[in-house]
Image (cartoon, rainbow, N blue to C red; front, side, top):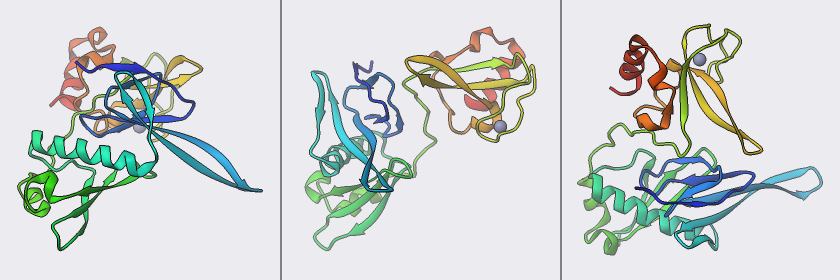
Length: 228
Ligand SMILES: [Zn+2]
Protein backbone atom coordinates (compact mmCIF):
# COMPACT_ATOMS: atom_id res chain seq x y z
CA UNK A 1 0.00 0.00 0.00
CA UNK A 2 1.20 3.45 -0.91
CA UNK A 3 0.78 6.17 1.70
CA UNK A 4 -0.28 9.57 0.54
CA UNK A 5 -0.04 12.94 2.19
CA UNK A 6 -2.23 15.90 1.44
CA UNK A 7 -0.56 18.63 -0.57
CA UNK A 8 -1.66 20.96 -3.30
CA UNK A 9 -0.38 23.68 -5.59
CA UNK A 10 -1.96 25.65 -8.41
CA UNK A 11 0.59 24.22 -10.83
CA UNK A 12 2.39 21.17 -9.56
CA UNK A 13 3.65 17.71 -10.44
CA UNK A 14 4.80 14.63 -8.59
CA UNK A 15 7.45 12.13 -9.57
CA UNK A 16 6.27 8.77 -8.33
CA UNK A 17 8.97 7.09 -6.18
CA UNK A 18 8.30 3.54 -7.41
CA UNK A 19 8.02 4.17 -11.17
CA UNK A 20 9.64 7.61 -11.66
CA UNK A 21 6.66 8.71 -13.74
CA UNK A 22 5.70 12.37 -13.59
CA UNK A 23 2.05 13.22 -13.02
CA UNK A 24 0.00 16.31 -12.24
CA UNK A 25 -0.44 17.07 -8.56
CA UNK A 26 -4.05 17.19 -7.34
CA UNK A 27 -4.21 17.47 -3.58
CA UNK A 28 -2.20 14.39 -2.62
CA UNK A 29 1.29 13.03 -3.16
CA UNK A 30 2.69 9.53 -2.52
CA UNK A 31 5.10 9.44 0.41
CA UNK A 32 8.63 9.43 -1.00
CA UNK A 33 7.70 11.33 -4.14
CA UNK A 34 9.47 14.42 -5.39
CA UNK A 35 7.10 17.36 -5.85
CA UNK A 36 7.67 20.12 -8.38
CA UNK A 37 5.70 23.34 -8.21
CA UNK A 38 5.87 25.86 -11.00
CA UNK A 39 5.05 29.53 -11.24
CA UNK A 40 5.48 32.16 -13.90
CA UNK A 41 7.61 35.09 -12.86
CA UNK A 42 8.33 38.23 -14.81
CA UNK A 43 12.09 38.84 -14.86
CA UNK A 44 11.90 42.08 -16.75
CA UNK A 45 9.19 43.78 -18.72
CA UNK A 46 7.84 41.34 -21.25
CA UNK A 47 9.96 38.38 -20.13
CA UNK A 48 8.31 35.61 -18.18
CA UNK A 49 10.21 32.63 -16.89
CA UNK A 50 8.82 29.49 -15.28
CA UNK A 51 10.36 29.01 -11.84
CA UNK A 52 10.33 25.47 -10.47
CA UNK A 53 10.57 24.66 -6.76
CA UNK A 54 11.39 21.20 -5.46
CA UNK A 55 10.03 19.34 -2.45
CA UNK A 56 10.04 15.84 -1.06
CA UNK A 57 6.89 14.23 0.40
CA UNK A 58 7.62 12.64 3.77
CA UNK A 59 5.24 10.92 6.14
CA UNK A 60 5.55 13.89 8.46
CA UNK A 61 4.92 16.50 5.79
CA UNK A 62 6.29 18.13 2.69
CA UNK A 63 9.87 19.39 2.97
CA UNK A 64 11.31 22.06 0.72
CA UNK A 65 14.55 21.08 -1.01
CA UNK A 66 17.44 23.46 -1.63
CA UNK A 67 17.02 23.12 -5.36
CA UNK A 68 17.20 20.85 -8.34
CA UNK A 69 20.52 19.33 -7.22
CA UNK A 70 18.97 18.09 -3.98
CA UNK A 71 16.06 16.60 -5.93
CA UNK A 72 18.56 14.92 -8.28
CA UNK A 73 20.37 13.25 -5.35
CA UNK A 74 17.10 11.76 -4.09
CA UNK A 75 16.08 10.73 -7.62
CA UNK A 76 19.46 9.01 -8.09
CA UNK A 77 18.81 6.90 -4.99
CA UNK A 78 15.28 6.07 -6.15
CA UNK A 79 16.54 5.15 -9.62
CA UNK A 80 19.25 2.90 -8.16
CA UNK A 81 16.69 1.16 -5.95
CA UNK A 82 14.37 0.57 -8.93
CA UNK A 83 17.28 -0.77 -11.01
CA UNK A 84 18.28 -3.22 -8.27
CA UNK A 85 14.70 -4.37 -7.71
CA UNK A 86 13.70 -4.77 -11.36
CA UNK A 87 17.07 -5.54 -12.98
CA UNK A 88 16.07 -3.05 -15.66
CA UNK A 89 17.18 0.35 -16.86
CA UNK A 90 14.18 2.68 -16.37
CA UNK A 91 12.85 3.88 -19.73
CA UNK A 92 13.49 7.59 -19.24
CA UNK A 93 17.11 7.25 -18.06
CA UNK A 94 20.13 7.34 -20.37
CA UNK A 95 23.90 7.52 -19.89
CA UNK A 96 25.22 11.04 -20.39
CA UNK A 97 28.88 10.89 -19.40
CA UNK A 98 31.40 8.35 -18.12
CA UNK A 99 34.36 9.41 -16.02
CA UNK A 100 37.72 7.64 -15.70
CA UNK A 101 37.22 7.22 -11.92
CA UNK A 102 34.19 5.01 -12.53
CA UNK A 103 31.55 7.67 -11.95
CA UNK A 104 28.74 8.00 -14.47
CA UNK A 105 26.27 10.82 -15.04
CA UNK A 106 22.84 9.63 -16.12
CA UNK A 107 20.06 11.84 -17.45
CA UNK A 108 16.54 11.26 -16.24
CA UNK A 109 14.01 12.91 -18.55
CA UNK A 110 10.90 13.32 -16.39
CA UNK A 111 9.22 15.58 -18.95
CA UNK A 112 10.18 17.76 -21.90
CA UNK A 113 10.92 20.54 -19.42
CA UNK A 114 12.29 18.59 -16.47
CA UNK A 115 15.57 16.74 -16.86
CA UNK A 116 17.73 15.67 -13.95
CA UNK A 117 21.39 14.63 -13.90
CA UNK A 118 21.77 11.57 -11.68
CA UNK A 119 25.33 11.18 -10.45
CA UNK A 120 26.14 7.52 -9.89
CA UNK A 121 29.35 6.59 -8.09
CA UNK A 122 31.06 3.20 -7.71
CA UNK A 123 30.29 3.48 -4.00
CA UNK A 124 26.55 3.38 -4.81
CA UNK A 125 26.76 0.42 -7.16
CA UNK A 126 29.59 -1.44 -5.34
CA UNK A 127 31.55 -1.69 -8.63
CA UNK A 128 32.40 0.60 -11.57
CA UNK A 129 29.04 2.13 -12.47
CA UNK A 130 29.15 1.05 -16.14
CA UNK A 131 29.72 -2.57 -15.04
CA UNK A 132 26.55 -2.35 -12.95
CA UNK A 133 24.57 -0.69 -15.75
CA UNK A 134 25.70 -3.41 -18.17
CA UNK A 135 23.96 -6.01 -16.02
CA UNK A 136 20.58 -4.29 -16.50
CA UNK A 137 18.04 -5.37 -19.08
CA UNK A 138 16.20 -3.11 -21.47
CA UNK A 139 13.05 -1.71 -19.85
CA UNK A 140 9.93 -3.79 -20.14
CA UNK A 141 6.65 -2.15 -20.89
CA UNK A 142 5.74 0.04 -17.95
CA UNK A 143 2.33 -0.13 -16.36
CA UNK A 144 0.54 3.17 -15.95
CA UNK A 145 -0.48 3.83 -12.37
CA UNK A 146 -2.12 7.23 -11.99
CA UNK A 147 -2.85 8.89 -8.65
CA UNK A 148 -6.36 9.84 -9.82
CA UNK A 149 -8.75 7.42 -11.50
CA UNK A 150 -9.44 7.57 -15.22
CA UNK A 151 -12.78 6.56 -16.76
CA UNK A 152 -14.01 4.43 -19.65
CA UNK A 153 -17.51 4.67 -21.05
CA UNK A 154 -19.66 4.42 -24.18
CA UNK A 155 -19.95 7.93 -25.66
CA UNK A 156 -23.38 9.28 -24.78
CA UNK A 157 -23.33 11.71 -27.69
CA UNK A 158 -21.16 12.49 -30.67
CA UNK A 159 -20.26 15.92 -29.42
CA UNK A 160 -16.96 15.25 -27.65
CA UNK A 161 -13.65 15.83 -29.39
CA UNK A 162 -10.63 13.62 -28.73
CA UNK A 163 -7.98 15.67 -26.90
CA UNK A 164 -5.23 13.62 -28.50
CA UNK A 165 -6.13 13.65 -32.22
CA UNK A 166 -8.79 16.40 -32.18
CA UNK A 167 -11.12 14.07 -34.09
CA UNK A 168 -14.77 13.56 -33.25
CA UNK A 169 -15.68 10.75 -30.85
CA UNK A 170 -18.70 9.02 -32.40
CA UNK A 171 -21.75 8.26 -30.26
CA UNK A 172 -21.75 4.74 -28.73
CA UNK A 173 -18.00 4.21 -29.26
CA UNK A 174 -15.71 3.72 -26.27
CA UNK A 175 -14.08 6.83 -24.92
CA UNK A 176 -11.48 7.26 -22.21
CA UNK A 177 -11.75 10.08 -19.68
CA UNK A 178 -8.57 11.70 -18.41
CA UNK A 179 -9.11 13.33 -15.00
CA UNK A 180 -9.14 17.09 -15.14
CA UNK A 181 -9.58 19.50 -12.27
CA UNK A 182 -11.06 22.93 -12.06
CA UNK A 183 -11.30 24.43 -8.57
CA UNK A 184 -11.49 21.00 -6.87
CA UNK A 185 -14.16 19.84 -9.30
CA UNK A 186 -13.20 16.72 -11.20
CA UNK A 187 -14.26 16.36 -14.81
CA UNK A 188 -12.99 14.47 -17.84
CA UNK A 189 -11.02 15.21 -20.94
CA UNK A 190 -12.13 12.63 -23.47
CA UNK A 191 -9.96 10.59 -25.82
CA UNK A 192 -10.52 7.79 -28.29
CA UNK A 193 -9.51 4.50 -26.67
CA UNK A 194 -6.95 3.87 -29.43
CA UNK A 195 -5.43 7.35 -29.05
CA UNK A 196 -4.42 6.89 -25.39
CA UNK A 197 -4.09 3.09 -25.23
CA UNK A 198 -0.28 3.22 -25.11
CA UNK A 199 -0.23 5.96 -22.48
CA UNK A 200 -2.56 4.17 -20.05
CA UNK A 201 -1.44 0.62 -20.81
CA UNK A 202 -1.60 -1.54 -17.67
CA UNK A 203 -3.69 0.89 -15.62
CA UNK A 204 -5.02 -1.01 -12.55
CA UNK A 205 -8.69 -1.93 -12.89
CA UNK A 206 -9.55 -0.03 -9.69
CA UNK A 207 -8.10 3.12 -11.28
CA UNK A 208 -10.38 2.82 -14.34
CA UNK A 209 -13.92 3.84 -13.45
CA UNK A 210 -16.79 2.59 -15.58
CA UNK A 211 -15.26 -0.72 -16.67
CA UNK A 212 -17.83 -2.77 -14.73
CA UNK A 213 -20.68 -0.94 -16.46
CA UNK A 214 -19.56 -1.92 -19.97
CA UNK A 215 -21.09 -4.91 -21.75
CA UNK A 216 -18.91 -7.96 -22.21
CA UNK A 217 -17.93 -7.16 -25.81
CA UNK A 218 -16.76 -3.73 -24.73
CA UNK A 219 -14.90 -5.16 -21.76
CA UNK A 220 -13.11 -7.50 -24.16
CA UNK A 221 -12.03 -4.57 -26.30
CA UNK A 222 -10.68 -2.74 -23.24
CA UNK A 223 -8.89 -5.87 -22.01
CA UNK A 224 -7.27 -6.55 -25.37
CA UNK A 225 -6.25 -2.93 -25.81
CA UNK A 226 -4.81 -1.98 -22.43
CA UNK A 227 -4.52 -5.17 -20.37
CA UNK A 228 -2.75 -7.55 -22.71
ZN1 LIG B 1 -8.36 10.39 -31.02
